[in-house]
Image 1 (cartoon, rainbow over the protein chains, first blue to last red):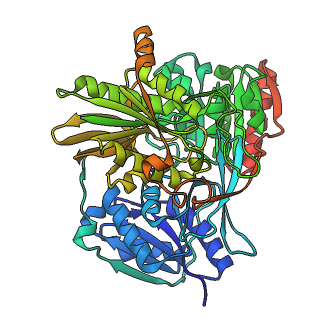
Image 2: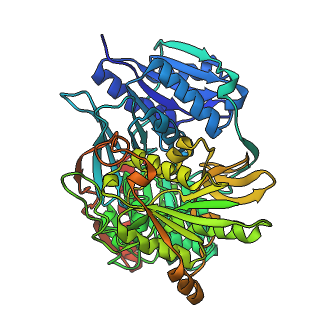
Image 3: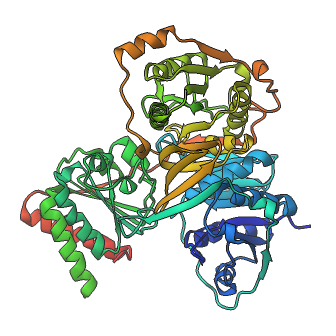
Length: 332
Length: 266
């Protein structure tokens, strides 16, 4: 008999499958193939369309399990926890991975508690151990100074959250088939002591965790008005503007833009650190970025140790020049 | 009203040491401080207490070696009323499941409060899992990524920072909230606070006091095992380009544009 299924916890916003779900498919497909088993996406929401759910199959799932109720439209801790637990108890998957997002990082520990499942946070690597079939979960800890590989030898499911952007989204393959199961949870699983009463979209147009390119603003910008220079560079790269703690403390950018230990962890394709010295706290939030470029007037700034290319010079000269040249390169 | 704030002692520097055989962090070695985000949780509790019409008691709860009394003492210098430390060799090596289970047992012993506060994550393990798992064990709604919290009639109102914006939620009855830096600006201890803190008691509780068995706490009971630890190789051979004068700057910027093209980023 083949082992039990590999599950991913897909996410949706306003009825659309969130892109981070497709990254989970990349991870999940690999694991399911190695284990010779089925890959199933679980998605909680309010009556998603077949077309939306089919995208999960097109990108590599064998099955989609959609828990559907009006109460599941937005993340609420209790219904999400209870519904996911009920599905796990019923179907006993071998592995469950979720994205290390505000939803994944909240619901996974709530589920793992009562199920006594092992859970590893914010993994950047997942593999199957050759002889045992156990899931090997690798994650950074202690500000990225240490990597740890963790496994759950006995308890099932083996659970992990995965750092967004730590892998590519799975591509869509036309003609893939799979089955879509819809499940209407009973009312007692949907009870909530928490009500969502208001929602305000972020000031910045793009969230830094979702961006492929992040231009980070540090103390070197000298004043808030100068942040415009970073915004212009971010615009030509379709990126978002991030910030060091100093830049946020000075009120140049709002807290949601803060990268680092007391802010967000990002892992974009390209991270351009401008006027950012690279404190250990900041490095912890961005050092898994694919390509890092640093611009700093201090040639000894620690950020240079993590950058592929470092420009030692004046950001007020270099930034507009870089923006113009990238714009020109994109034109041609 | 009663508020319990969970605090963790973390190494002051980033030079964390690990036990190479068990893969767990060595906590006694480095000089320890309160996990930075926990200071924000303490501040939230103090602000709620100051705004409350009723009497309010704030208890700080920690789990760790006897030396962790130091961070509880620091919390009390800020205005926390009472400190409780869970300390027992039996707890050593607990993963987040066992830690949450043990802390939850302690909360039951202390009596379920109106609110449990903790920092969203600690700077050493960076899992952010213990708080939510504890909420699940205690059947409390878990309010994560909290950037503001206040008391309302019959419960709490909190603002959560999500990927794409801020969400406001209202909670009926007790809750567990994991707070972000934005939730409050920590105050500094006062001389009087420090003096008062020395007179306050810290209760130390063992596994036996909690009625927690070896099957549910410590390294052996933990569902997860550390297989190996290693130093990551993030350090890159940086191509450092001088860009002080205009000619250098132009050359350096061209090199960056070239790299971005090579990598298909533009």
